[in-house]
Image (cartoon, rainbow over all chains, first blue to last red):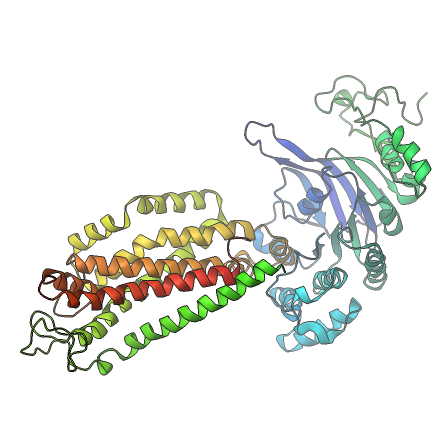
Length: 325
Length: 276
């Protein structure tokens, strides 16, 4: 990728969970690489258990990383000493999936929003109430309600508070982990709009993790599709949605329900079987593109268009990749 | 909220109210002690082993001391020892339980195994051994009881900490940049107080028995200071001559531990501990 230096650079990020009770170790995230430019949103999609959330947590260093590197604003986060990392948290924030559990139940909203300000000393103590009110206005909420407790708010309002907390310290980068999936459809649209507006206003970069393909298309500039801990396809949102190059991406897009009972029933009747992908490790010989990666040492990644690539792993037998006879 | 749980809650509130009223009586005895006793606890009268009279409401003991006065002054001693010992056990249990549960891993393993060693001894046997070895002073009694009840306290703190530390708001605080120490104190501890309150109350009830039982066996604070345990032991010797003298200390001991059992049950139902 060319252009300006990326805000976030993730290279070969891996997370392996240690073996448990005789079961083999789990590679939750396996050599994931991508960049996020300033002001850009990268959507991360994939089915449950594909490693999306673990990727987000590993980038924020909330999860021990077993390999690879993460650079934010040119600073390497992986292996950074704790105290330094805590200072870097000013630049990166987290919006969690469940607004009902991600706020301290016994803390007032004012205290919840003041906490990051105090931790990073970003405003003088006397100005904290003012900044808290400003944050509430930023997420379209009435600053007068800050003396209330989280349980007095609806799911959508709580998620606004979560977003306000994330924005308290003026971050550059926010990981949104399924930020709307716990909300009803109308509230989802409002929160997505809010995130959109905030991005324009504050030039934020997002890593937007979701399983809802329509929402990701609406917010993301670039989309990464994850399966089995790996990114199998990465490209501009329009390219990936309109010209999916990897069989798994095609499966995923086809699985979206259609709002027509008859057609949906027909679709379910001949639903594509679970992709029978080729063995993941220790694969010998040439890949589906005819390249022997073990011999050439190149990464298992093939460009199918400008800034649009697929992994040559996990191909179901009998399907030829684009650009090959 | 369902009907049953709100009924349970209001029953809990009633129990807590009764428990608090009983506790107020106990605290009054501790606070006022000698100043509300009708006689000096060591003053003797010619009528020994007397039944209840207008002068001595609960009668007199074998050397003619007023039983009511001794009961009040002795209660002060017994209750003070109980409160101080449990407060120490609570403090130690909070620190160890929070450390163990929050940090986890090897720290957890080490602390819990060490506490298991203490826990494995029968409370009473350990108390007797320590007091017998170091001498029956008030300080030794308090320290022994504190040590003996620390593991129970630590376990009650550790359990809920293990689950609360995985809650989303803890991760959210960490991602904001809050330090681990502040997370443990501000984001975890306030959410585990309910079970701790209940357990503290139960341990208070147990401790009353332990303190009085040790005094009964002569391992309590040395005479001539009165306390409920030694009064019971003394009265027991003359039970055939003056059966009524046993009643005072026995009722006092039961009342005190009942106070904390009622409080514990009330708190349990009011705070909904156990269903969470």
